View 1 (cartoon, rainbow over the protein chains, first blue to last red):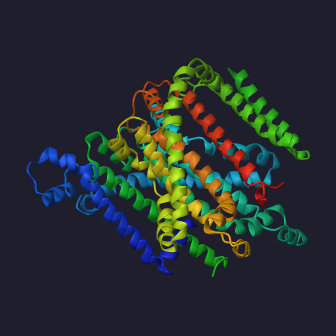
View 2 (view 1 turned 90 degrees about the vertical axis):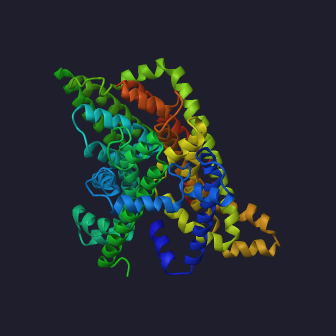
View 3 (view 1 turned 30 degrees about the vertical axis):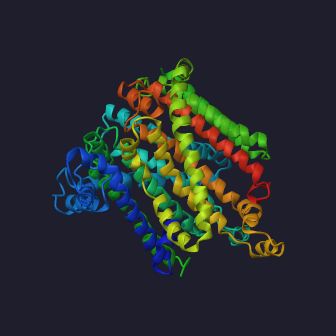
Length: 295
Length: 280
């Protein structure tokens, strides 16, 4: 929702100039901070530089403390377009592995979330007993369990996609439960009474009233859920020992001091998160328009 | 062996039956407390019985009793990890991040141009996997708690900023006009009208950030830490397959998370008693 509003604002009204200004300010700040941060490494590597040479070297070091945006973008372009997709050095390869786990976990989490929400709305006992625990489960820093889930599942022979997907599932089910419970309960008493005067069965009440009115809430939750799902997949890649995926890329970058590699993985993760949210947004607009909720 | 399985199902049915009877009664605070408690206790007993019944290797899934024993015997270690990660890393970063975001929010609230530039970006950044900054901060600020604090600051800053700015930009014109007729200064209007009415949003931000802070501090330790701290202990004990210790750490994290969240909720109730959502 927030993200969509941001995009709409970005393109429709006069926010584009302020945003570009702020971005430019960040860019200027980034390049100017890069000089003092990298100067120590420049001084170690090169002797007798003039001031302007020093600055240029600081912006183009091989293993800088803070890489500059153009270095990151060059690295990204190179590893995305000029490497074979199957190659271990290709960002597309690593990005795809993370994306797979993200999507699998997201779908599982959405299904689990909707099922739990249906149970909570329809069964009073479940509402009273499960809902407090669903909320409590989110005050727990659940990502901390990620390494354990991965290692335990590996040791019983489950490897690859599934363990990561389970972590993503756990992170993405919560927004769906909360949003769907809210959405399924959003019809007014008047509307419910109207359905009853038509002697609607509970199933008809669900399919024709509760479910359609929960769709906007569902999409708002899905956007939060998919962002959380991506974080889960990235953290899930850490304990497997830096083999494949964006998280593994970050870890490998840490091991070998390849800062540009870390930053390019980070930028690709950001790019993935943004595109996933945008895709859900497009689906939302089409669906809501078809359902005549928005025009 | 089968006796465990039978008692597993017996407990399940008993708990289900008890809860459905309780929830059919008039809802009161007592019932709202007992129903989830029974659910939790039944869940723990079922977990214990399941481990026994299917003779699951306790190394892979330790029963709750083993975790409890480990928790009690390892309190000194857990306390060291707790202070290292949660007090030094998470709490300092939380206070610093939320505090600075609050101040920046008040500053940019005065300038519409900054608000329109920063707010959409803030919303965008809130959806990004900021945890990924952890290896970079570990490289910049070293292995100790300073780098964890920095990760937490980066994680909580934008959610807090966005929420505070949203709260401040809720303008009730009749109230603003009233302040104006009192010839209230900017500072007076801010302190007596706008900040109090922004409080529900500010607390929403604080709640979201409390979980983010714990996650940030723990995950940052996966990228390098001194030989103490919850994230370090979790990753190293997982490597040694001492999963009961890992669960004990998770128990600490869960308790700390709930306690902190609860504390914020209590403060919120004290300060925003006037808000419709707080009224029964």
